[in-house]
Amino acid sequence: MMPTCTAPMLFDKDVHKCVNTKIRKGNDVSIYSLIHSPPHWHIHGLTLTELIVVIVLISLFVFLAQVNLFGSLRKNTFKAQVQGLVSTMQMAANAAAESNRRYELIIDPTQQNYILREITSPDLSQVLEEEIIVENDFSDSCRVVYIQFDDREFVNDGWAKFRVGHSGWQYGGKIVLLDEKEQPYSVVINRLNRIVSLKKGDVELLEPKTKEEVMF
Image (cartoon, rainbow, N blue to C red; front, side, top):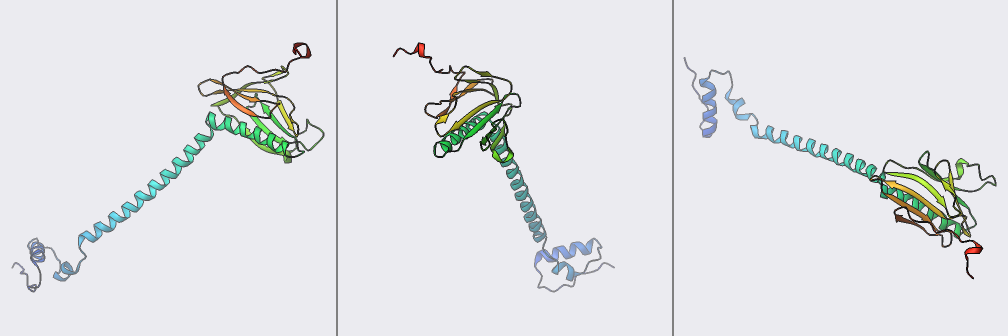
């Protein structure tokens, strides 16, 4: 004998249709459970909310990773590295001019790095760890080719040292670097006015003249 639906008439048409469908299919389901079960859209809404939260969190992590990556890449660009070198040398010159302290920038073309230290020991060949103020490495996008001093000394292997004190730079000169496109740039140190500047190309260095070359 086919079961019949005896639910009260308080139900709406959709409930009647759902109950009758379940009865016709012979499923063992109570009318109470059909009426009081949570609507399906609540379950779908909760799942969608969770999905949105997950997507937002993943997007946030990706954004942070990109920021860190781009920050690292910017630090390794030619412009950032050469500006860091110029700023370091100019900072040392300004600090020496305002005090009796002496500073030394040591550049090593072989190891492709440089160190700025405050000279505190009479032994200038000894670099103490506590003297080091700045220590940086160059990358493939910013390479030192050679260093030339204004007394015609040329260095492309080993250490080149620029010392500065209250009266200014002991020697002027230039530091020639190559960018990622192999284009040369020169960091020029002027011992007369203490200024350290960046110029495009391998510029000609102004060398001090001898007494014989001076006309007056």
